[in-house]
Image (cartoon, rainbow, N blue to C red; front, side):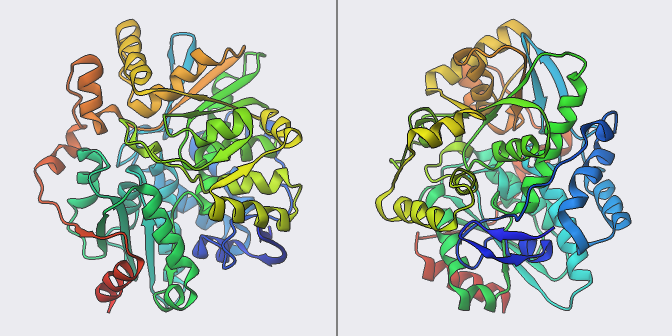
Length: 457
């Protein structure tokens, strides 16, 4: 399979380049040059690991053999608390897809464990070292650290917004003792952290000098890994002929784009709901065509406290029917003016696949409370936003909510909503008493670059 950038469809890349680079040199995002279709009937009835092998292998080409991929997938998913990685439970009139049974209690583990082992495989076959630099709004950092810690020839630098992630999220990142892990608390919000990483990638002298790689949701390997659980959950309820809809708590548009990829591959998804909190740029874009950057609100669902949704560029490329110049122009408008207006024709195309909803803080707390009272199930704030979306958008069919994080990661919000304390699983309780290790740095790219260089000498 060949890949192109959303900003240059003339130059092609192999999966190896796409995976290691993360972001294209021109600032665009990698996508397959031509669509890939699957035979749904061939995938039916497979256990999660076997399904993952079938879905992922066509995308990775000559990066590794099918036998090597089999071993890596089995290794990656052996650390999950569920035999089939995820769990689908019935909660009222909809199903909840629990994606938080990995080592850091968030859906990010599903892709990140795989990526960590991809890196190890690559470096075992190459005489080089890599430095991963990643921005996190809370969950990506811990998942990336768990996947990379202790591995040879690779360091990881995680930038998180200082005092804007939950204490549990932070401690899952900052209490490790591995010498290849570095945590940076940036005085700013997640978008500031993301901009710092993008600026460092764009500085070719710096990024090439440190052999920089990225595991944010823009990395195509994460998208294909996440597409697997859309297929798996479909087969769990496929005996019913009603349409299937997914509600996805959304910040950076990566997880819901993975569902869109699954649909493009042939999975018969009816609608994907982009469920947002008060930081609702995607809701405004999808419901009325106004992608307009506003100030970021600090909320009880911090992983979604984002305004610039990086993966949206991949959808814009599709809307522009593969016109890379139009995509460049759209991204330029977003960067320079903080605004991009989607015309009605393109909005109709979006709404053929996507709908959206927005929830206030009060609505999130109310949803957590009501679900707990009715069903004795505790939803974290992000999953509650996904659950509540089906109350705002009435869709017939099999409605599946993606539960993206364990509620224990957000103890303050859960306490406020239902006045109970949600504990970490016993195997992770120790992190609450461990010493933390991170450096606080100003929102200044030169200071961050200097900090990184000093630690890789």
